Image: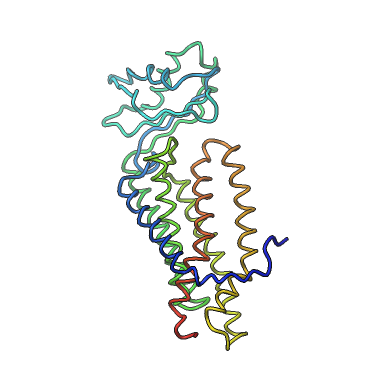
Length: 313
């Protein structure tokens, strides 16, 4: 089913506007990134504890209980650590940044303390109380950060090779710059939620999976447009190159918008109705799909047009 047919939009006439908008968003994103990202425990190390209570509890109540926790022979004040609801007001997620010289079973000691301190609100079966319990050392977190960076970089390098072989290197320049644009803006929006909004999204391993997925999604849109452009170059050798590019974009516009719309419907439904633990992943995918759809039309294709356009006029 096509919602938009027979459009005759002159996309290349909006090229400068698109470049200006993207440059502004990218510059703003880079500025936000310099202010910092909300790195999850996966990358900075720490302990994550998910707890389920029998009745609703307040965040302040948990903070009071965590003001003085004895684990082994050491005393800890963890009342200022990150504590938030995890689904309902009966489920709590506690994230504790790496502590120096923590004893063995640090996370379990915290769980035991909270369980004993709130006997009227915890389930009788202790196994039902613990939803999750995990810890990552700073060294492992640093290693994961490096691997995440290289996974994204290697994917871009392989895409550069793929586009160069399937089309030509001049096509690949636009595709890669559009993907870099998508990553920077997605990261910038995550940083914005961390600094200036009442909710924040963590950068964790799920986020890296989302970024790699967005790279594939955005590239797919771009390849479809490039295929149509190459087809029109062969079929209409007398056409001006701007006409070829505009016609190719118009002929694929319905497919691009339909795909993006149906994908966003699913992602939005899962974001608002799904599990809290998936929010970061889904938010990254939503932002990535929106930015990726835009960049395939207004970044990748115009850059490709400027790169090879002079020889195709």
